[in-house]
Image 1 (cartoon, one colour):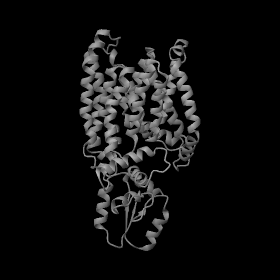
Image 2 (cartoon, one colour):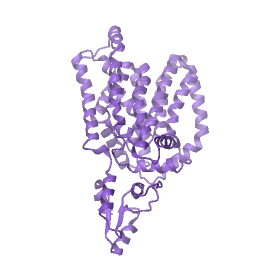
Image 3 (tube, rainbow, N blue to C red):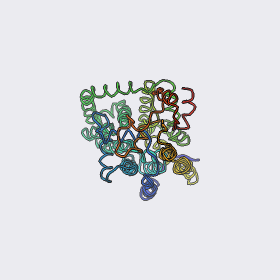
Image 4 (cartoon, rainbow, N blue to C red):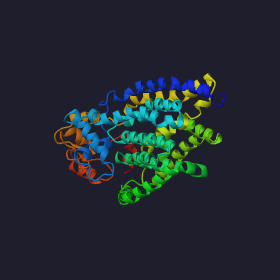
Length: 437
């Protein structure tokens, strides 16, 4: 594999057609976001969306996400269905493809930006959250929109525009809080451009606007941010080493090991080549991941909290592309990135069943076999009630069946003492843990 700096002629040729063909392919493949939206059962996080969306999101930090999903679902008609709840996240997941191209093209070039879009289109992780009634893809769209506005304003030396871009990234927290952490990553990346005196002079206006605007915003939002942080700490999920290990393992699984290694190679290439744009992307990734890693020591954290960072990780993975001048070598590099992605997407849509438990099938079987006096205990009982009792929405307070979890041991004792036949519904992956209780 031969690396060299591309000539201006080759770069101009590539920018004319190649990237847009790749983008068109990404948009075509991305239509799978809408394929069979109602196929898979709701899982508990989606059930919580139902509760918070239709019972009023109240003072939730990410109320916009719930409200938007509820609005889109009502637009489909009543009552809500799996498909109606997932339509808006699927639309946002699809819009993320052209937004990623638009956001990264002025900074990283159209070739890299187009391949980021294609890798997003074929990602099982992106597909999963696009077909989940949560606000993650909505947050991702806002981070990409904000990044694109920021890059364009920064290049023009526009202070108000640069601040507006970062504020859009921060506004993604109204769809899910994890998006705002990316704003910290972007702020950390800006340190690259304040180290050298000439850069501080060139970008003096944006830096002044960003410093004053973000400082005022932090003072204004400090009480809400502190309240949200305290709520996170008291959410009941313990952090520590187990949480950190889970964050690492789940992130590598969803990013895929191949793309994670490729991103490391791209980061190394940017560092060795002293490519400040590539190093900027690296700093954004590292600062965001380190922030989430610190949070993992305080509460349970999973890969979903770095979801909006996924396009940036892919950007690092494709960073060496313009310098791979041999066509067979470039084809091999791209195939190495794309083939595992496509394989994972195929597995997600077939034998892995959309990465979610088959609640509807389990509940239908139990309800068809039980006798009138039989008791039923289920993990995530409120989700079961959502299917069994039309019009029910408050999944935190199940009514039809009992909770089958470690927080309600009295239900097992009551079932045993009653002498009545009892059906127990649980996820197989947690069966051994349940036995240990």
